[in-house]
Length: 320
Image (cartoon, rainbow, N blue to C red; front, top):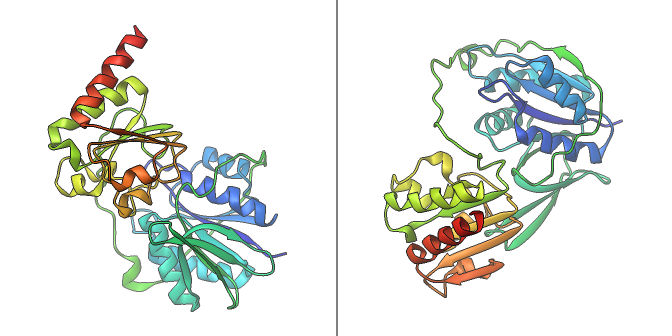
């Protein structure tokens, strides 16, 4: 029976990344032989979570303080040669893409990236969106397995499968020379409060239409009343108004909240690809011809500096 594998890099807090659980949900629909290659420190809780989401086997590679990509790719190459999986799924984190590229070079297999769906009926086929999601492309692998696929976040919904604790197999990477000697000396994370973008059910995002960095305080106030996370466009991140951790879009985070409120955002393609699958999109912009209105479920043509304070006032009155 062909195997369907998921690559998983541990988060900085040694937890299972959300994208791993999303990929496992998809892998379970393709076949029963689901395995995870897990790179990084872990715990019994992590193994239990992976098993609960469908992993029957976990191959565990712990790189210690070294960068994981070179060693993980070498270890994966050996395992692929031994077990011949049909497919290896990766997320779009830096580590995932680094390992996917190295494994591609080692195996002589192509990588298909930016996937939004995968099927395995008579061969692996991958669905991708191009030109800001306006065109859908389906590509079928014709080479020998495994197919290597990098998947966009939020393409699949993570759902527990009720599985038991998986078999955990420790793996050692072959000697990869200097490529495996680079070490992580320090880690720095942006401090944040409130809901995280990746998990938020409501997101309030701002663009250049806010006019200045200090005007993001308006969005902070609105988000606080809604229990929402605050996002931003690349333009305001590049301008230094907010940190990169808040960026939504092609080169930022892909989000899929129930409600997305776009404040002063024109709707450039680069931003839209990261939020277009939100449940309900509400756009506030004084330019009635702004592209954001073409995908909005509700559009408010007006000055964000007047509309948002009125919205905040109304929410305060409703909450008493």
